[in-house]
Structure formats: structure tokens, C-alpha cells
Length: 372
Image (cartoon, rainbow, N blue to C red):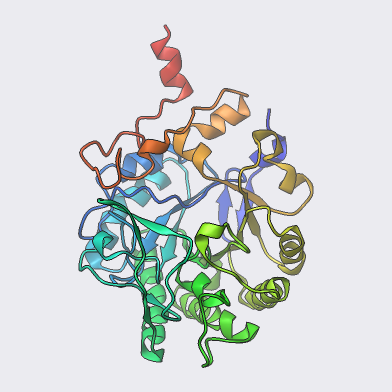
């Protein structure tokens, strides 16, 4: 049985979570062409409402920020209204939900977008170690368009606008995505950002856009409704290198984030930079959500026990086990993830069977009934 501390209620600012287990943001590529959320999302998220907190799939803040195939947005009134029943379904079962806000930046292939656009980025440098999932298979990302100061100001406003729309949709808060190789993370990298203006070069400049987005978003909806996600030194396929001063970079960024009194800092730990992660944990003064990649189940609660984290985020286990909380509390075997249905419902872009691998993973109750 998982350590009891995981099942303790937790106060996340004004929100009382029933436990310390968090559903990580997980792209599922089951949205509609107009950026509205898919028809089965209410069922999908409601099935997982026993998690202490649900963080939505990455949700685009603008058309220019769209990069995933069939991914939803939260910048138009139509999109906002499509999210309302999803969030209401989670709330009706006692759950809580933050929307993750994303701009893909250079991680865009025209084949995956409504208007066939090329991505924006700090500099005209394509990701060197990554390719895009498209309906025609994997393809290299094109060289992105370097952003002007006007473009940067637009993005800052897009994040705050989408935060406002998220609250109007009923969300408990938003998570600003500063990780995983997307736009804000691209500004942090010394290999992805070679600007010579106030948004490039030294540590302060490379952190500037993230801090400005956070400030504007906090001004719009209140800091206690805002979280921020980071992923120091991710895998090679993210194509982001924060440089030899990576520890100093994140120390500066996290120390500045302390000034906002955020809902939380969400740290994705790939296991490459223990010294950096430890410094982040020591530096940040608020709530930390830790998502430790590829850890075995018997180490799930170690960050709680060692006081490195306040909340624990899980991804693939939450996808394949809608009743994950019950299974962990009762030492039940977990369903295995079907990797072939992670995105779309089969092959990439195939929405003919959008429920497959989405809302059809069995609960323990389903299995017990079947075995009667």
C-alpha cells in the first residue's frame, strides 16, 4: 500500500485537495478542428476526478501557438464554452482542475495546424533532435520565424487572456507551461535563443519572458490561481540546453517566482540534474508539485517523505487507470498503458475511434463485474 501521507488533504491556497496525487498535463489529440475540446473529454476527466488535482492537457493560448494535432485551445468564446461542461463534470464529483496554458513556439509543423502556419520562436533555429507527429508520419520541424518585440508582447497578452477564459470556463486555476521544449522553455535555452536584445544572452534576459508572462497572468486572475511548470535539462529530443550555468539559471528564475506567491511550482525531474533539482527545491518557498520521470511505483511517495515535494504528479498511470486512487489505496494491480492510442485514438490523427485508449480503460469495478 502506498504511504498514507499521499492521501492526506492538502490546502492549495484557497482550494482544499482531497489528496496529494496530481494528474499531470497529458496531450491526447482528441480535440476538434476549431480548437474546441472533444466530445468525450467530460467523461475522460470526470473518470479521474478522485485525483487531488487534475491539470488539463496542454491548451493553446492562440492560433499561432497551436502545434499539436487535434489539440484544444482556450482563447475563443466557443472554446471556453466547450470546456465548461468538462470542468463542471470534475467539480460535480468533488475534483479540482487547473488548465495548462501553452504556446508551442517552434514545435509546430504546418500539417498539424488549422492555417498551415510556421511556428514562432526566439530565434530562427529549428529543434535539432526532434520530429513532429503528423497525419503523414514523422516530419522534421521547419525553421521557425524569429519573434519581434511586438510578437512577444502579443504572446504575453495571449497567456493572460487565456487565463481569464479558463476562469470563465470554471477552472480553479491555470498552469503556465514553461517546460518540455515549448516557447517559454525555448527562450531559456542557450542553443534555441541567440537573441542580442533584452530577451536573450544572459540569465536574466533568458528568464525575462517567463517572468513577464507569469506577472501578466497573475495580474489578470490572481497569483493564487497560477502555477508554473519547469523541466530542467530534459531529454535530448527536447532540443533545449540551458547552458553550463543551468543551476544558476534556475536558481534565478525560481527565486524570482517566489515573489509572486503562486499556487505552485510544477517540477518535471528527468533524473539528469539532481543538483539542480535539489537547489530548486531548497530555493522555492511555496508548494512544489514533483513529477519524477520513470520512477518505479514503490518510490512514488519518496519526495513526500523526504520533503522535496508537497504534491506528486503522475502521467501514464493516470491515463490507463481512471480509478488510480482506489487502486493505489487498495494495492490493486494497475492497467498497462496502450501506447498506440495515446494520441488520437489509434494512429496519429485517426479520430474514427476517439474513445479507444481514452475512456475505455477498465476500473477495478468493471473487472470485478466482468469476472462474476
